[in-house]
Image (cartoon, rainbow, N blue to C red; front, side):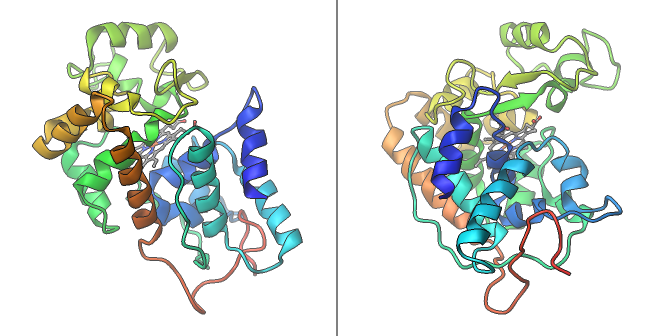
Length: 284
Ligand code: HEM
């Protein structure tokens, strides 16, 4: 049921694949993206989630699951299945999703402060990952989730126009490869462009492959956080090894293992939390 919905969403020309980034940012946080409060302080209203697309899609999948099997499958599990199927249908690896997690019973926007901002350096990234029991290998492996999907210009336009706060066309991130910078500038016309979407892995943004590592190794990672993987010897070596494209199976196995590990970070089980009826509202 989930796979059929993801297949049709991926096939649609104006597809919204935000559901994958929902899970991507931190699968420990997957369930947290769904809740809505009338006073706009729900997690999906918090800054890191404002670019997420696909809430409507997640809700449609959840509604179909509820119809077939009421009060049984949590939003956390639905999101994990959507992420798995989106990767697999993009020609990436397949893994069994350990099911049975429950949803949190509160929805507070500052809980999303744990999500890494795209401006993060290596130290911040490793700290935020460590907080959910993920290590430097998980960081470099999971960052390659950026082999699929698109980003809004404003998620990286500081690198093009306002890197040190001077807000002019020369105020650029010197770690970004100059030709790629020009290409991005031609797509994102200004610092304030908040509508344009850019492919994160140009040319194969619908295919899960090792091209992300090629890009990062050439200093063409879209976010500062992608480029930061070159600043640490361990993650740099991983990037360079997989930039060759010769170890695809190894990367796929690593990715599946890290996704399962991320999904197991601090899960609610047993009688903790609840099974949401709708992902964007609390039950009571
Ligand atoms: C390492 C820390 C990470 C940071 C800082 C980060 C940041 C971002 C940002 C800023 C966007 C673009 C949002 C927008 O402007 O629309 C994005 C999109 C995305 N991210 Fe990440 N991310 C991280 C980790 C991950 C992980 C672990 C995965 C997957 C396992 C992932 C998969 C994705 C995908 C698939 C999209 C595209 C979604 C779409 O096409 O709608 N990200 N990420």
